[in-house]
Length: 327
Ligand code: ACO
Image (cartoon, helix red, strand yellow):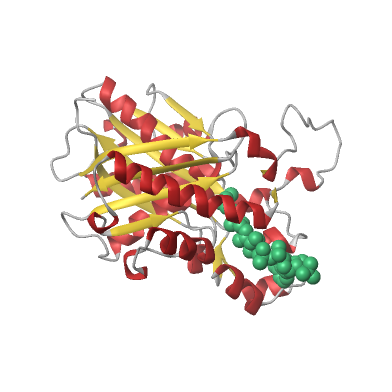
């Protein structure tokens, strides 16, 4: 690829309503102590009456503002989500309408929690094809729409939110998207599922939603794969780019669980102070977790000009991926 793809704007948004561990104690047989020690999560933001495209809209507007661009400047929209407003129209098309623009290509992609990293690579492709590309990548999830609040083993883990970036070939002050690496292993798909309503598990008219409609997972097995896959792909993208852990100023891993993040940090021999963690405030927001963390890290001054940031994510499918960004 000859052209240099840049990230020229960052933004994120989480809904106002907060669900604390104490709130969850009133819903299921759990405790703040259990949730905190097993996951590090203290609270998560959840929607009241907002859909995926509503969260995406505010995150996108924040990224546009950061890039000093107007919606009319965009050439493509990619929305990474497994919780779109509807199957049809896509969240990206609904978002396009809410942004007040028309005609530009817009579609959703689903790679579960790795969706943002997948979307970055697709956007990189658009930038390589079109010299004037200004691609909005927004990862937006209303995970709670697919969480069973009777299942204590999953309902404590997730939250809602959106994160957005704008990619282009030009922005002189932009951060360079140096590389992206993606993987998937469909043979492990059954370990983490949301099956109900799909064509293999169609809903019949009048049928009530059951457990299959919601996130189900084999937590301990997912945990092990998440640690192994994220550590391995981080090392692989570093090796591919002739870099080492010392060349990375900040690691931004998928914010699923603090114990997974700590285990990845240990395997990579990454000092904890060089790992960005906000899972305590948002829980696991699936595809949105990495761009929320990236935008928040920048906002909080954790990323300085010249810093190299390593993004790494893991999700259902299984899918996993990594990206290198030089600010
Ligand atoms: N509160 C209290 N007790 C609970 C809760 C809860 N919320 N949930 C489960 N328990 C109980 C279990 O019933 C079990 O009880 P038992 O021993 O009497 O049978 C006990 O706690 C231990 O359960 P485990 O499942 O063994 O707990 P574990 O230490 O594995 O932690 C957890 C569970 C947090 C889900 C962990 O496995 C994990 O983090 N897995 C990865 C999950 C994840 O992050 N997935 C997403 C990654 S990909 C993506 O983002 C979609």
